[in-house]
Image (tube, rainbow, N blue to C red):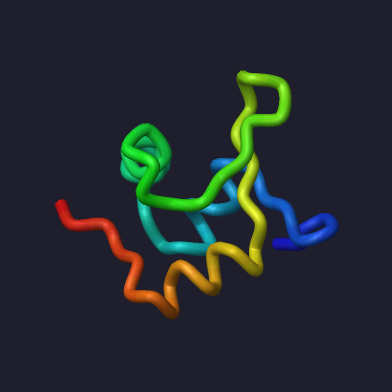
Length: 62
């Protein structure tokens, strides 16, 4: 997948992080993962911030 300017959609970020879309939505709802909602609806993720989150031990506990 190509990541335009380092930003990803929910679908792209879920694929990148190897998790389900619903798991990613849960992380955004709890504020556990860095994300942006510039227009208040669609969620975007910065690839560099996701990489930093992973390095800090970010994970989804089921």
